[in-house]
Length: 275
Image 1: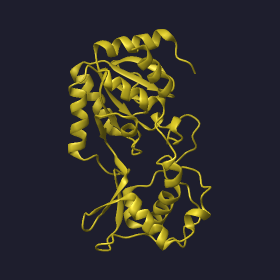
Image 2: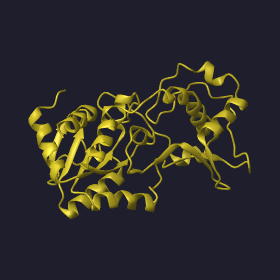
Image 3: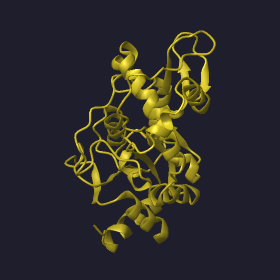
Image 4: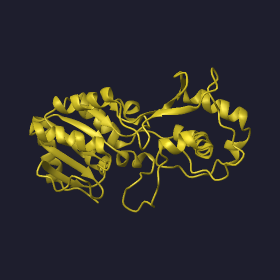
């Protein structure tokens, strides 16, 4: 779906006068090859909760198996035109920073300098007992040692919305534990059922407090953290822009100055080129 030039000009004019804080969701990364949870045409998906991960070894087996199989595919993915456009808009002074619900690290890879990762990053794991942090690559190397040949045997598994792979047979998977104390290792991300850490939310809220507008890009606003940032923008009386394929939770709010039905890569790149 193409976006008309008048809409692009309106958004470009807004950013010229009101530099934006940007909240991004999974819809921004779909053009990089990472599927989203709720986009139009996506099958129903039930994300793993923190309770399932912590209390059931089968869920931990599925997570680490999917993480190992998916990591090779994820390594080949690159920032798309939307990520790159946001980095250019920040460099030009039209974007003050990005708060993202994604854990794929693509904003930083694209060159964005001010990035608040609301849900953490998928490349760090942490022990719940001793709190030591480990690079994900190290943990996955341990997975390979414990499960020789598993990654190669499942290399064709489809990528899941969180960047892991939708693996099948997990019955014999051995889960890597903390090499220091033997505790449970978990990804250093915010699971469904957990709250965004207060300092992280405050960093995102600060972006909104110091911006002239708020852009919501590629998110349906199903997660409450995004709604709270919209409320911050509304209390300040700054314009809010929605760029998304499909409906969002805020489409009918009076604060929405511009609602663009379209892909984030197309729209953001067009605006960056206009400016």
